[in-house]
Image (cartoon, rainbow, N blue to C red; front, side, top):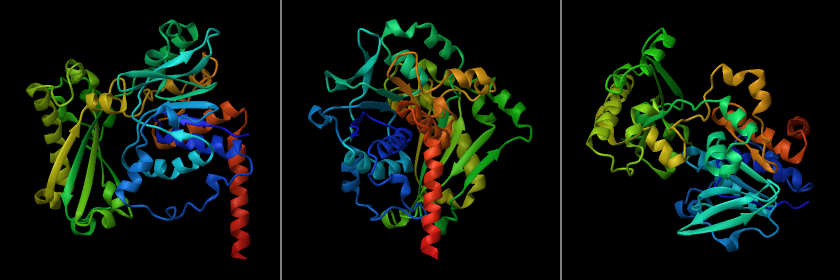
Length: 397
């Protein structure tokens, strides 16, 4: 069976979903999971223009595969995750699919029988309909049900029930730092650091969330600090003498909500002052941890929950989709919110149908692919793992 899939645009989780779907659909074709993952795929492509051509394939109707079997919609690529996209896209294309960007999905198309039958995307000032018998959404449960479904389907009892079971995750605040110097010169390590301000984290976290926006920056309970450049084995080849740091914190959407309708970079002095107060507090902690970088900082950029809302379509600036509360993990919730949706032929994938973060998104993709194919891909992966081990042992002997 040949499976044609269009992704407009898709996130890393959906790329992995397509690897599973296409690998099984094509039967005898080489399995993308069957390669040795202990080293980067060869050849290593570092040339910027070559990578751009793969990752930024602009949408046009003549690129849509004929005989389309599925449409996958989702969030954009970014950061180190682009490596997943870069090496996955050729596999999808060899299977007859396409990965197209710069055409935001405006709505899910539904036929007269109430079945999902495609998506409507915006190309410039024009709306283009793309039809397919299966639609898979990685846009998150809130965007899918509240923004992309036709209005008459948003009130379906099953849709409302699922939405009532989850809440929006807490918003995220990010600081990106460009540095002069290599990782060796700056003492940067390929590790993740979590900085707690108080031993009683629960109390500190609640105090922070209950703070006013003016006092919140001085009460940030937890910081995540990492050096993406130190983790990248090819970084020093591409950007010698340069390094990066990233620092993440939580921040309530409500603190920034009054500027949600303002244009990005045009939100005014009060917004910028609030944003800078978070940056100053986070930079103070970073410099205590990395005092050696103080005179090496060349660039600092920050993003608020509104930044997340604008660039990655996070409804309330959340980093990890739906809130990971105890109620989210109750048996009834996990049994109700599944890849299958109340709208026939429409499926959910990614972290909102499993757990947050990259591992959760990956498993969400596997569960979704299993639902679409009506086949347990976890069993397939166990069998594949055994084959790889057996092959490795045979080669060793």
